[in-house]
Length: 246
Image 1 (tube, rainbow, N blue to C red):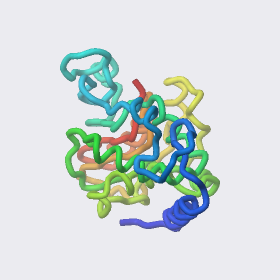
Image 2 (image 1 turned 90 degrees about the vertical axis):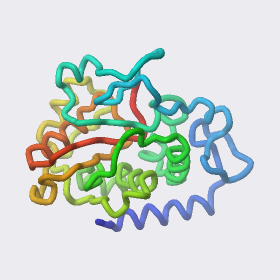
Image 3 (image 1 turned 120 degrees about the horizontal axis):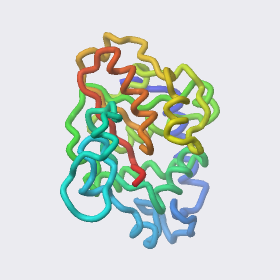
């Protein structure tokens, strides 16, 4: 398992926040009477929606209403390069604010709260134990700016049984692409073309890979990762994200 000084620094940041700052809801910022896990007020907690059936059997996008799981239109057209993608929650309400707080506000307390919620929600769905767990990487420049990779920290917190399978050096980002948040699906795919690389193809050849990220929207980032992993000889590529846009 590959460890990093960023992970140590993030742990120290979390410890300092626990000591120096009063507890507030990660969703709405409401002052809470005490430290609790998960760190959400009752109103925000009620709005958190675990991802449940029906959803696409390949990319995991949730469908409205009732019914059986089935393929979505994009997956019927073969647009998803993953063998399977699953998420713990629908990307809405307090989950959105908490993820933003983690990524851009360094709200390290979110990790323990997410871990508690994932454990109680069955958020791994039908994913089986992989050979390797690979967090979606940041470019080194962005990693220095942020101080941590949220995908790696989520993998450490939310997937404790697979810690020994976690590697942060087998999938690299060698282009510092612009943020995806305001780009269309086509622009996202173009933005990420050839952004990722597998430095040691022999380390992934023939293996079952689980990619981990915070949010899956169009799937462009995870598809770009899957493309280079498939080229390197990966046998099976699944993805797990904390949240999925509806």
